[in-house]
Image 1 (cartoon, rainbow, N blue to C red):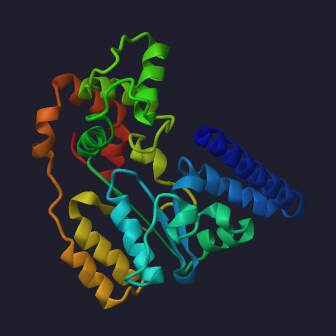
Image 2: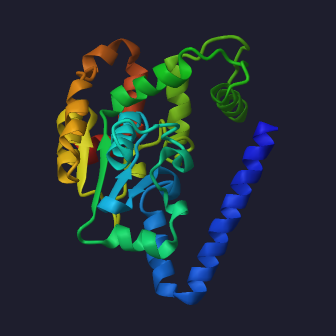
Length: 274
């Protein structure tokens, strides 16, 4: 029933979005064009964009780049240090806003406001892929009924790969799956960062890096005039991110070549060495 309910909910949401699009297109085709430009600037605009209208802030989420911690700090800035965080990755429950929760004119206005501030964070592609595997795939036996297992089984059937029920998912197998699906943003956790991060009208004003997370996040919070108590909270949570050498044991020669080839745009655009 859960799956059916989720499908119905998505259908209703998509229908409402289409209705708004049609209504705006009829009333104001120029505004509708501007909104469509925003939607095309980076994959899954409505899902990975968080808006904080009171401070004219837009955060463009990139999964597996400390997004849970970043969203937590934004929620705490907006609702107080003791705010109930909830599921920050579901916009309706995050206490932030997604484009679907504002009307189209408001979204366009905030995205084009010269006083606005848009930011994102990126990560070394090698480290991000290993992190994704360890978090989502490493402990999932094939056939356990989970979303990840379903993805693996469906992809294996599609490409003619044999998988054995109950067996673990190897890192090289995950890399093969990622190589085939990263470009189309099948799942944001291993999608190309260069596909997720806008490079047009919503291009970030600031792109922080996971490797310098604390310093870069503090710079963002200072830019949006966050209270000192929140800055102190971020400093207290400081941790040194694992460097590339710590992931080396997972990277076979073939895996390294695949990541360098498929995610080349990420390395080049965000200044990471191959």
